[in-house]
Length: 350
Image (cartoon, rainbow, N blue to C red; front, side, top):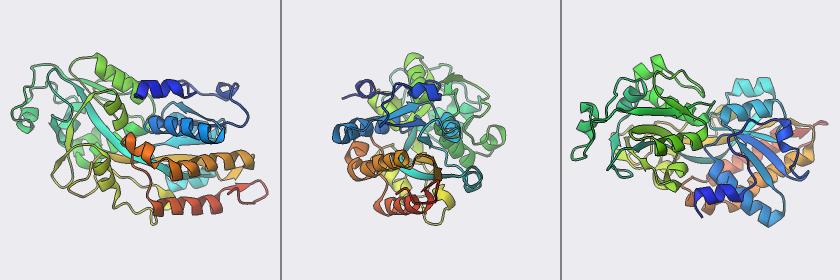
C-alpha cells in the first residue's frame, strides 16, 4: 500500500483548519488529535490497525505542530501533537504534559533532472546558504565541489519551505542554527520563521507536492513522504564528518545517545547528534495532553491507543522508516502517565 492509498484508507481530513466542529461527525467513542504532519503516515497506519483490533477509531487532523499546540490548549481535541517539544516551563504554566510517540528523520528533497535519490551530497553550511538565498544556482562551485562526477545544471534553485507553523520546520531550522552561525543570526530556530527566500507549502504534503511539481526545487520533509512519493533526497554530512543516507539505521544511531531521564519534560532534541552513522536531522514527535482531565475515560482511551501502538506498532513504524521508542523510554512514559494525568478529583487516569 502506498502513502496515497494509506491516506485514503483512514478517516482523516489532512491539512485543514481544525475546530471543535470538525469532529461533529466523529463517533462518541473515537478519540481525536491534531498537530504535526511529520508523524501523520504512522499515526494513520496505527489508527487503521487499532480500529480493526479494537473497534475504536482515532481521528487525527494533520495541520502542523503549531495548530496542534493551539488545539490542545483550547481543549478542542483529546491530544495535540508536536515535533517541537514544549519547554518544561511552558508545560507547567499551561498544565500540560508531553511524551514521545515516535522518532524519525527530516530530509532535504530535490527535483533536479538526472539526479537520483541519495546521489547528491549536502553539508549544513551549503543547505544554510541555499535557504539564506546566498547560493542560487545548482552548479554553484560549493555544490559542485561536494559532488564530483554529478552533472549539475546551470539552473536557478527554487527553495520550498513550510507556510504553516511546523515542527518539521523547527527540526530543520534547529539543525541549521546549531551548525551555521549566519543562519542562526538571520533566521534562527522555530516552528514559524521569516524566510529570506523561497515559496511555501502547507504541511509535509504541500512541500512534497511543490518539489515534485517544480523543476530545480529543494525542500525538507519527513522521510516517509520522500520515500513513498519517490522524491529524490540528499545525503547530509553529519557531526562526525560522514556523509550519511537517511534510513532506519541512521535515525536509530542518532537517537542512541539521547538522555530522556535527565531532560525535564522529556524535551529531547535529536538534531546534530554525534556518531559516524547518525542522521543529523533526526527528531522525536511528541503527544501533548492536559494533566487534569475533565473526561478521564476519554483520556484513558488516548493512552490505550498509544500503549497499543508502543506494543504492536513497531513493525509498522519500521516499514515507514520511523524509529519505535526504545523499551526504557516507554517505561518512563508509562510512569509519567501514572503520576501526571489525573481526573478532576485527583485520581490517576492510568
